Amino acid sequence: MEKHIVVIKGDGIGPEIVTEAMKVMTKTAEKFGHTFHFEEVDAGGCAIDKYGECLPQESLEKCLKADSVLLGAVGGPKWEQVDKNNRPEKALLRIRSAMGLYANLRPAKIFPHLSHSSPLKQEIVEKGIDFVIVRELIGGIYFGAHETVTQQGEKRATDLMAYSEQEIERIGRTAFETARKRGSRVISVDKANVLDCSRLWREVMHRLSSEYPDVAYSDMLVDNCAMQIVKDPSQFDVVVTENMFGDILSDEASMITGSIGMIPSSSLGESTNGMYEPIHGSAPDIAGMNLANPIGTILSGAMMLKYSFGMQQESQAIEDAVSKVLDEGFRTGDIMSEGCTRVSCSQMGDLIAARI
Image 1 (cartoon, rainbow, N blue to C red):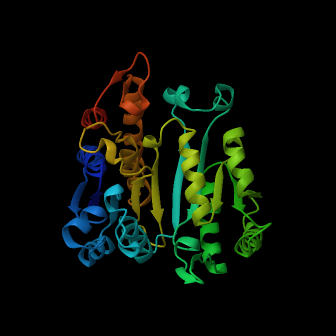
Image 2 (tube, one colour; image 1 turned 45 degrees about the vertical axis):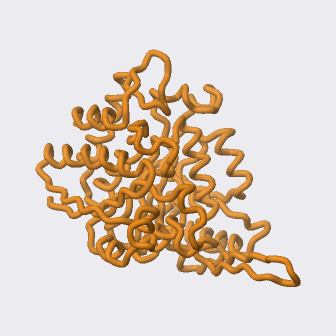
C-alpha cells in the first residue's frame, strides 16, 4: 500500500515524539512492503508564531485530503494570552469538526512491565486494567455557544451544552461495535440526575442497546464512574460518554496505568481518515531536551495502521516491538525504575524501530 499521512508535530515535545513515531512507522512500512509519504503542516502555537493563526487554511485542507493525520501536541504557557478564538487548542477542535471526527477512542491498558508504576494498590492492579473510553468529540459544551457579558458591573459567563439524538446515537453505535470486538460490555456515563442533556443521552442509549442484545449494557453517573475507575478498573470494558466527561475520565484512566506518556488515542468519523495522537500535552518544561516518552505517539501510529489502513499485522508488529523493549528493561525517565536502563526519547525510538 501507498499512504499519504499529514503530520502535525506541533509545540513543546511534539516534534520530538512525532519524529520517533515516524521512524518506527517508516521501518514498519519497509518491512511489510508499504510506502508512507509524510507531509508536515503547521497547527497550534507554532502556527500562531509563523502565520498569526492557530490553523492556517492550507493546513486544514491538507488534513482533509490526507489518508490520515498524525499529531504530536499543541499549546503551552507561551500562548495563554492569545485571543480565545485563536488559542492553539482551537486548531484541534476545528480539525476534528472539519474532518467529522466525532469518536475518540482512548485505551487504558497497563503493560505488565509497568504494573508497579500504577498509583493504585497492587491487589487492584492485579485484577487487570484493560478498557476503552469512547468519547464523543465534536458536540457538547466544548462546541456550544460561549459568552461572557457584564451585567450590573459584574462579569457573567455562559457555556452551552447541547446534544441531538443523532449525535448521541452515532457515538453509541461506535461504543457497541467496539464492545463486540472486546468483552461485549458497555457502560454509558452521564449525569442524568441533574442534566437534560444526560437524560436525553440515557434515553437514546437505552433505545440503542436493544439493537445489541449480545452486549451487556448499564448506566453509571459520572461522579460514581470517577470513583469506580480507581476502586475497581477491572469492571470496565467499554465506557461511552459525552465530550467533557470523556475528557476528564480518560485522563484519570490514563494515570492509573502508570504513565500518561504510554497512552495513544484515535479520533474517528464516518470515513477512515482519522487523526491519531498521544493523550498527553506538550510538556514545555522538557521540550528540546530529548527526555520525552515517545511510546504513546508510537502506539498512536500503530492505531492508525489498524483502524485507518486495515493493517492488523503491521500494527501488532509495533505493539510487539514496544513490549520487547520494555521486557529488555529500557525506560524513559517518566517510567524509570530500579534495575532498568534509562534512555532518551530518540534512543527509545531507535530501540523500538530495531525490533520491528
